[in-house]
Picture (cartoon, rainbow, N blue to C red):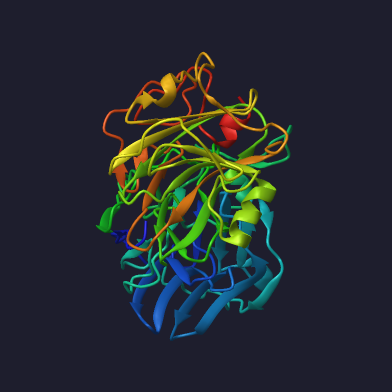
Length: 442
């Protein structure tokens, strides 16, 4: 989350690590269009290394060394997919005689060759990363430009330039780049491997080069390179909504406007479960689903979910279900801080709602009884989970699409989940699963 970072200072520092090293990590973005320096080794404005997503969503790796000037590259490629994990490898060996071989940058296994700017290092050039000074992940060492997103499987190799193939491979069936969770690499004296399958800052390389959390809260997430979970999509929201906590929290920023945020993942078949924590008790919030076209219509016309024929949602104020702007009695209004349960059966065109462990209307998603039957024709095709409609200072919502957290607070006592996909506060109905890439393929 924002204002969170971790840090470690190498015990040795200097060559060979300042001239020859590899950084490998998986990263998932949340914020677009803002400068975010998510790595940094900082002595001063004239002596530092940092990795940055620029405000135009390009990527930059930069080193300032007063002895030999600024050396960096900036991609032409932009990184705007907030639903995907990117695998980055930055592999450097400034001791090589061929200039073009000294810096290699790979994205999802493919070497990047298109740059808007590139300044190659001279032979034996030294970077600040690898010096005996604080290495920061989450911000550059200047208490600014914090990263808001997720990072996983972070490797620093001291003394060796590795290609991306050391850390991943192409799936022979899908053609997609996939993670190698236990690469066979030599880490060197100051090397480390952290954030393996969670938020542990304990070094897994065997070197005991552990990090510490220096600011904020380092939150574990089930979302990982091999199983991507839904979040709210920053490209499918009204501008009057701020998204926080890895795009799982809605924070309205305007008064008296209907606004929505839709999920990054959609489904046309299957059975899916999600939870939402209703943080403000003024009754305006809506929770439900819409089609792709419906989501665009809601945003374009500033309508609430359920006001159109291509969306259906429950109204927090009274528990009525709205579809095509027509209300049907279904449950009761939500209490402040209630955890709202939503189960969508896209195979039988039903949606179920409940609160704090009790399903409304005596519904039973597992057996398929007493759900709300939505119009199968109007809501045909891909459907997104949608929340929204509120007022600044009110109608704040934290979503749990299976990561096991509401904002930065873990669920208090995880319910059962036969699919073993996702962590939720309450029992996941039999036959249902989390909206994730694994869940979509169950």
